Amino acid sequence: LELVAGYKKLLFEKALELSEARDKLRNGLGKIDDTREKVEKMSIELEDAKIKVAAYQKQCDEFLKTLVQQKREADEQQKSVAQKSERIKEEEAKCQAMADVAQADLDEALPALDEANRALESLNKKDMTEIKSYGRPPVLVERVMESVMILRGNEPTWAESKKQLGDQNFLKQLMNFDKDNITDRVLKKITGYVAMADFHPEI
Image (cartoon, rainbow, N blue to C red; front, top):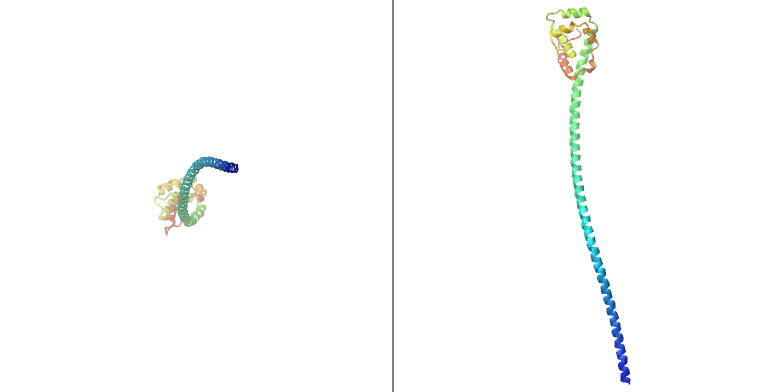
């Protein structure tokens, strides 16, 4: 009986060990299944993440290309602006030089114009008739009349001068002449006369 009792006890212990081992195995298998599911889920999430990362990378590459292009265009525009600015400065310098020359011509011509204006104020119709009567006027008279013709926009010849002298309003027109709006072209022509040593419109 003791042997049977001992055997039963041993059998019970073995059955208990097997039961515990079975439970451990089940738990282990359950954990493996759970882990496998998690791994599969994480694999799917990882694939999705890879797709998103690839899309973001593509967007970043395109954005970077755009930035590089914009930087290149900005550099070109800045270079163009700098070149235009330099050209503008050069043009301004040229314009200033031309203005200085024009002002110098004006400064040189205005005294002669003022003298001529004062001389005009002392003239009368009798003087006009006397000047017109010349078949061939003195050189100084001819030069003064040529300069007057240039100022009026007429042909600078004695024939044209005689024609203009015959106009009853000639003196009045000369008195009212707009000397403040003489063109640079006319000023240059007049300056040529003013530069002559024997040109004295006041005589």
